[in-house]
Image 1: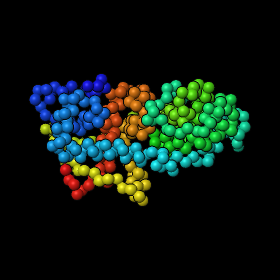
Image 2: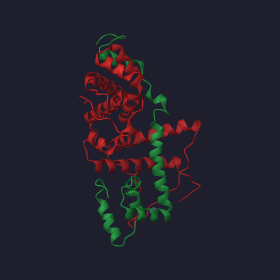
Image 3: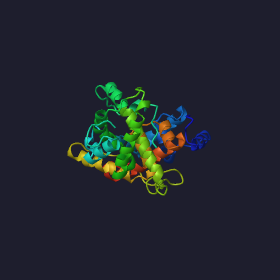
Length: 107
Length: 214
Ligand SMILES: [Zn+2]
């Protein structure tokens, strides 16, 4: 278990140890820890067993993954070069604030 | 004042842009060569502005932050040690300049994710079954889809949006994000997870594949 795991993690562990099951809510709460491989082996196995039989949670995990990927792609500079256009006024403003008004000069 | 960073970003987060003859350029910057300043502003400014827009959203604030970043960068160019790329160094300074502006505004009111997190019955079952998603479109629809995804990110409450942008988009790691936001790594992890969940919820109506109910 990772040192940075949420506090409720210990609640989950004790609930599972006393014979409880992983619920859909647990899947949603510990999904990031699962994807970051921060769940202990036992809990990871139980988590995956739940996913095997719960279509709703499988869909949730997959759409969560897609969300992260889509956000990256939507903002990636290579795929969206128009997002980083410098307005000419900003270039001039920066150059003059650096002490080089109207082109190259020693600041 | 924006602090000049000494640590390089994690490799995945570093914008991979190396200017040709970078070491010669840095020597000129250190010597106060105005033509070198101008070249860096023109070639690196756009990427820095894109970062600022993602963090601050507001266009005027973003432009001001880029200006702050350049002033800080050139004032501190003597401290640039060449163990990271110039682009990486400028990226970190830009993030710092943006966060400095956010701290001044201190908009603490927008912390609720009401209606944007999954809900469950007392027994842990979901209130609604989750549907599978379709594949993202390609071709002409792609640009439109990306616009709507960026708009959805902007809708996230600032407290959550910042963490999502720094971690998932700018590529900072949990420790770097916690340090910049003056919080704990555990808090960063929880906020990132909530932000991703809320973004998933915002995108769900457009991506849900109605033909494949759960
Ligand atoms: Zn489930």
